[in-house]
Structures are given as structure tokens and as C-alpha cells.
Length: 634
Ligand code: AMP
Image (cartoon, rainbow, N blue to C red; front, side):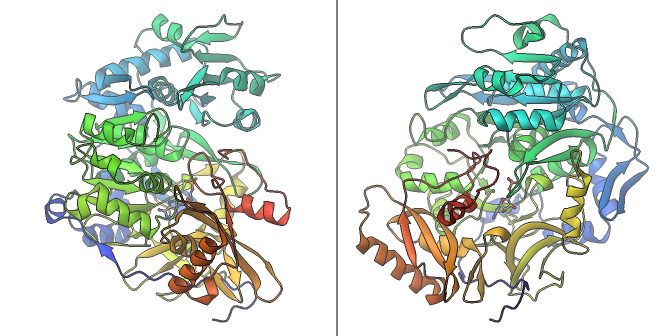
């Protein structure tokens, strides 16, 4: 292939014809039976489509227009008033779901707390009354730095209930990251936990918070205190006392559909993190739509997203969408392999989990520990496992299909691609369609996805380029907090489309394979190759557990491929293994994608949400500045 100038043409080099289908009984009961028809409706008449779904929710004032689209700004349910918690809480607490379990929280030590919709509504309402008593008002920003606990969720919902804007910062981020986010959000109120638990250890969050807020003019600091309580200083409030001192008398504040619900910081590949803003109305409608239609959740399901409230999956699919839809949602604090690698499956058996949402990094970890762990438990309740966050390597997909859903007899494993900015699944494999290995799936209802080159021209099917979206949908971000120009960049980098920063290819049937981040693309002898293909080929070698590849300067080829490899347990780290891995990739992908160097490493640099950070490896290799590292695990 010829690649001149900046012209972005990408080659998919890993070709996989393998695909899996869901069992007939599962397809027969799919919430979205006729995908093609639904999709066509959503594109032909987006206002009719989303307006119809939105009618199932409580609105204090009806909207006058479903969508206003003035490139690149979009508004949904214009003129409508609602409050997401009226739908996530009151709609159920005052109805037939009153005594139904809303949330089941599991501690790392196996302890458990359960709350019904009625109880949760009252807890949130009490907390909201307490916030109001402290002077917190509509549109105030509140930073939440809490371990994954019931109180963390209650704090989010209480802010939303009074129209305050929450900004959850993952309670694993350090002092600088927390401080920057408090300042950028302009938060005068911080709700924080004093400790967290991970791998049996107590994590001291208090000292991180104290350093982060040092010298900042906060109005209040609310502590959720576990273990021994400490004496509080002026302006400091104990969360439990706040809850106990107030009555559940705060009704949801009617807010404009476009009123900001939250800010969630996502780290750009370089530079300062961006505060992605989602709103009450459209976000509620869109995320809940996909919980039903893509995640296929039924009224009586037990549903578990193994994420954290610090990430967008936690916002959309631990907290908001399941509650909006009146589902019982499980969430768990702690590492997925502690106290032992079977703990996830033990919980699936314990609660009879039906639908699980997890990440490729978790699947690769399950695979590393082996099938004995899931086999020790009865996980036959699981019928759908949705995976998002990174490319789901074919090898990991194969393993999950075989060992977690009994080779497709018991259920389906579905990839889904999205971003913090997009709020919910965007490109994904509905269970009524075959899951093609290496492909994330097709554009979901409401989504018009294209693959373009750098001039914005659509590339032919079968080719690769930049993944782009041609129109907005209700649950897509509205702005970047205090930096609308940065929002506009998403829509202006390439004319007339939203670019996601990912490279991808598509096939004749509209299946899209996400090949990696565009910043990470390898350019070997004029061939532009995504990182996912090479990494996926690497992990099919029996010695390899995980890998990351980068391009390093090469006098002849422009760039050569260097692979960082984590070996499976008990493997030798000698040259023979290196050679055999190189040979293996050559066989799988051909000479062009063969790594010229392999380095064995103990682990790969990852974000705390489990994504491999290739730019750090590259910066280290080239002795350059790695940019923002606030979301890094180690
Ligand atoms: P975040 O906003 O932190 O959730 O990260 C979004 C990015 O994660 C996307 O732009 C992709 O690079 C990657 N990503 C998420 N889901 C997938 C998926 N199913 N397949 C491939 N990449 C994914």
C-alpha cells in the first residue's frame, strides 16, 4: 500500500473469519428482536425514535423539541424539565418496585449491604437535605472522592437530586490529580472517604485528600469515615451524622433537560485532563435505552458491572441506567483476584448474576488464572457478558466464549466500544448478530459511524482509517467543562464528523474493528498498522499472557515494532522464547508486522481502569516526556 504525507490509510492485518452466535433461546427472548428495523427508524427519524422512548420517564415539564442540532452543538428534549433521580429513585420507590432490591454492595472481605428502592430513595433524600442545609445549591460543583461503597453512590445521587453537579474522582488517584480536578471543577464542597480497602490492605485516603485540598478555599469537606472516627476540624462534617441529622424530605429538584448532571475527567493522551459534561435529560434517556436494548437486561435480572464509580461505566452502568430501569445492580469494592482468583465467580453464583459488564483486561486476567476458577462455581445464571474498554483480543474472546458461557450454549459474549465522551455503548455486537472475533460490532441505534481518511473522505469497506461519528445522540457529551473550544475540536478536527481518536476498519456488513488509538498507530515501511492486530497475534502464542507494542525509529523501515511481553506463569525468559514469539507473529501476520525486538516485562503500564498506556512505554523508550500520568496504576 502506498501511504503519502499525512493521508491516513490503515491496514487491518489480522484477519479472522471466526464468529460466534448466541443460543437460539437467548435470541428468541432478546429485548431488541428486530435490530435492522430499529436501527433504520433511529436514523430516519431520530426525534420520533428518542422521543418515543423518553415518554416512559417522569418529566416535570414536557419538551417542545426532541433535538436541536447546530453543528457542533446539540440539545435534546429542549424545554423539558426532569431530574434523573426522579426516574432512578422516586419512580420506583413510589411504585411496584418499592420493596425491590436496588443495590447490592459487596465489600472486599465478602461483607454485604442491600438496599431497596424505597430505602435508597430515603437515604439519598436525607443526604440531599443535609447538602441543602450546608448551603449546597443547584449548579454548585461537588467533588466526590470515595471508595466504591453505597455511600459513594448515595453522594452522587444526592447531588443530582438537588441539581448540583458531581465530579467523581477515582479514589486511587493521587494528590495532584485530585487537586487539579477540584480546582478545574471549581468545587467548594468535597465528599471523601477516609480509607479504602484493596487486597486486604487499608488505603489511607485521608492524607491524600488533606494534601490535595491544602490551601484551597473549600466551604465544606464531608467525610465518609470507616473504621475509627477522627476528630473533625471546622468546616468538616461526618457523613453519617449528616445523614442521621436530616429527614428524607428533599424531592427531586426540577431541572432543565440540558442541566449538567456531572463532570467526569478523562485524560487526554497529553496535556490536562478534560472535564466531560453529561446532562440530566438526554443522558438518562440514552443510557437507559441501551441497558434494555443492548445489554438486554430484563426486569428481574441481577446485573453486575465490575467497574468503579470513578469511571464512565460506573456512572452509566453501575449507578444511573440500572436504577432508572428499576433493576437490581450488584457492585463490589476491591481487586477482582483477591482474596482469590475465583472471587468474581463466587459472587456470580451467590447472587445468580444474569448480565455482567466487564473489561478486556479482566478477561485476560481470568484467562491467565485458568478455567478451573469459573468451573468451581455454578455460573449458569450468566447469559450475557458485555466487554468494553479496549480491543477484545480474539484469544480472550475465544476463552470467554468457551469457559464463561459454555461455548455459546449458555450465553453470549458481546464486545462494545464507547468512550467517556459518548456516555453509553456506540459500536457493539447485539446478541441477535454473530460476534466476529476482532470486531467490536456495528453502529447501535442512533449512531451513524463511518471510517474516514484525514481529509474526511469515507474509506471503502474493507479498509481502515479514523473512526468517526456523523451525528450526535442524546447521551453524548455536551461540552468540556469551562473549555467549549476543546469540545468543538472533537467535531472540527475533521470536517462534519466527530472523531474519537481511534483507528478502525470496517467490513462489507458494517462490522467495525477498532485497531487502537490513532496516536499509537505503527508506521512500518509505509504500512500503517494499529496496535491491536499485533498484540492480538502476540497473545495467541502459548507463552504470552499480555503484550503492548510501540513503534521505534528505524533507519530503513521508518518505524520498527517493539513488543513488551508479559509471559504466562512459569515461562522461561530466554532468547529461544523470544525467537519463537517472533516466528509466531511472522506466521500469523507476515513479515511486515513482525516485531524486531521483544522485551519481557513483569507487567504493563495501565490506567487504573485497566487500559494499556503505550505512550508511556514509547516515551520511556525514546527518553521523552510521557505527558499526563494522573490515571496511571503504578
Ligand atoms: P474511556 O473514555 O477512558 O472509556 O476510553 C475510551 C477509549 O477506550 C476508546 O476511545 C477506545 O480507544 C478504547 N475502547 C473502549 N472500548 C473499546 C472496545 N470495545 N474496543 C476497542 N477499544 C475500546
